[in-house]
Length: 111
Length: 113
Image 1 (cartoon, rainbow over the protein chains, first blue to last red):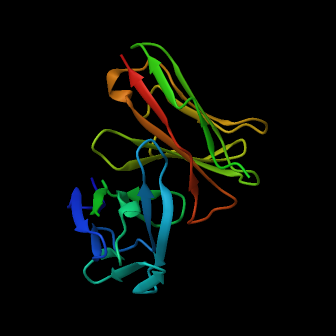
Image 2 (cartoon, rainbow over the protein chains, first blue to last red):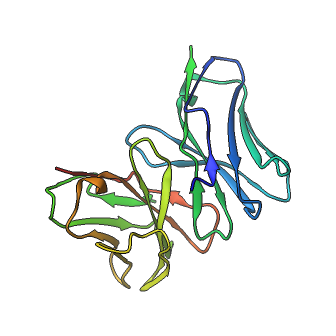
């Protein structure tokens, strides 16, 4: 039972444009959400997080939006850079003990 | 300040053999988490340990899999009598306390032939 879903397995964006990665979840009790970035042959690297009491969190070029009523999370990267090309995972947690991960979206930023 | 160290990076085992995956958490981190990523899937939680204690093993298969985090030394994920379906990337993460932001290692890629 996939509680966190990333329905787009891949996304291509021109350099300088906005990348929007989407994530949906089913459990309304999730209280913390994160985005991880992963390069091939490496472990996931924490990117940005958001608590369920907020609807937006911004860190430089990265902004995460949370729509609790729609159970939807999105990551905006603007402007996109070639170095952003990676697989992005969203993850959600109830207690901090464990995270439920989506299946990932492979982002390619075209120079 | 070394990150989370996992070894080996790649492990090949024949069906029926045992696989031992090691994870040394970041210095000062006493909480360890193991995740598995099967091909074409996201990371799936397996187990959460503190020193000498298993806190949550709700994601561990009931048979053949075990994990430990002894007082001294790395955390070990042990898979007995491996089968082809165990082939996956196994990631370890650590945190200084029960925390939302933990750090992942580079993973061990297990291939069962």
